[in-house]
Image (cartoon, rainbow, N blue to C red; front, side, top):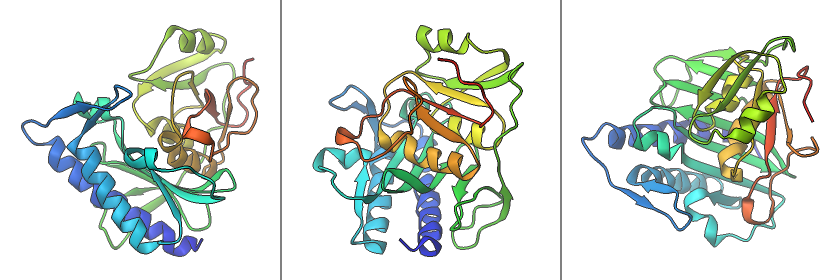
Length: 264
C-alpha cells in the first residue's frame, strides 16, 4: 500500500462523510431503523457508507473493502484490507450527544497500520501520517489542504492515580468491577472510537472494553492509538489484538498507555 497516497484520500473521504452526516444530524428529524442485530441505523450511516465506499473503491480497486453496512457480503481471506465504520456511535447520533465518529483504517497481516477518526460534531480529527505517527489536526478542515498538525502521544501514567475512559452507552457492572482494581484519579465517559483517541492524546491512560465490538468499531482508533505509542491487548490473556478474524467479532480488550500495570 502506498501510504503517501492513502492518508490524504482517507482524510478527504472522512471529512466529506462528516459533512453529509452533519447535514442529517442538524435536520429537524430523521428516521431510525433497527438492523437484524437490533442495533440502530440511520440515513447518515448509509449515506456516509456509500460515499466512503465509492471513494475507496475508485482509488484502490484491488484492495478488499469491509464496511459495517456491507459486512454480510464478505468472507475475508485477504492479508490486507480497508475497513470502515461510516458512523460509529449511532446511539449517540440518535440522541444528539455528539460523540460519534467516522472511521477508516487499513489493516495488514492482522495489524491496523493506518487510520483516521473524525468526530464532526466535536470538531476533532485524528489520524496517522504516512510514516505511521499519529496527529490531531486543528483548523477549518479544508478537504485538500491539511491545517495545523499536532503530534500526539500517550501519557506517562501514574499508577497511583490513573485517568480512565469508559463507554458512555455500554457501561456495565463488569466494567466497573474491573476499573475498581485500579487506583483511579478521575474517570470520564465517551462514545464511539473517541475513547481510543483520548488515550492516544494522553487525556486518558486506560480504556477497558468488556462488551461486544466489531473490527470496524476499533480498527481506526486502534491505529491512531498505536501511532501515538499506545497498546491494545485482549482482555482475558493480554495477548496481542489482531484483525481479520472470522465474522469480524472482537474479544473484550484493554487499550492503554504503556506503563499502566494491567490488572488480571
